[in-house]
Image (cartoon, rainbow, N blue to C red; front, side, top):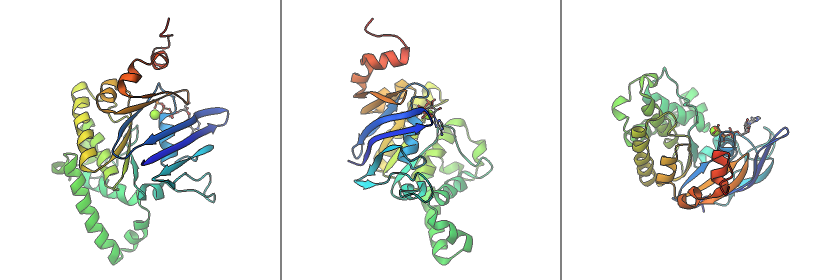
Length: 263
Ligand SMILES: Nc1ncnc2c1ncn2[C@@H]1O[C@H](COP(=O)(O)OP(=O)(O)OP(=O)(O)O)[C@@H](O)[C@H]1O
Ligand SMILES: [Mg+2]
């Protein structure tokens, strides 16, 4: 098992955004996390990546406790430490430096997420310069993998929407993840782009030896590539299973359509 989100609960004031989420990901799996708006999906990602510390429960990566910190002085892991251990993510809203080149976006993501290299970068230490060369090579490698290598000099803001989404994934891949978390990668894509995205996700899973957890509203994408699916609604895990099981689950249908499916 690669990841165990072990009975995670998080409360924001009176709101329980995620309640008792118990999720296990096996190495190499491609798993979906779905549910209506506000169900707690992004919040689950934020707990796995250490942005939020759960109110209860813990996060284990290959049996190592990577649960986030409740405060800067509390025990637990910082997001950059979790990234360094092999957990990378993309964001629901694209977060690129639109004025920088495609290549610099990848290199900078690497710096920001792996803080250890920041001081070396500022002081231009010899170790850093070697690292910089390696980072450039790594950046080119991931840009090739996502099909953006020819656009490496282009300003990120000039890319088409689907290309920007791929660049976001390239940035995540540059940190050498074992686990990749994708937050609505197909958002805003047309059916054709969605289709291409599915093939692309399958390809990077294989090429980079990844385990992938994907939040997605596009059911064609989710049902098309996920091996297993977890369904959240109002913070609660209302179902888990194969795409077939999920599609015929009455609680899931009810949550999505707001009607009692058995009626
Ligand atoms: N930092 C926060 N403070 C207070 N409430 C929060 C915070 N983060 C999330 N929430 C609340 O937690 C709930 C779950 O939000 P979350 O963003 O995880 O939903 P989601 O499933 O990702 O929805 P969507 O599909 O719209 O992206 C929402 O009610 C949201 O308002
Ligand atoms: Mg969300």
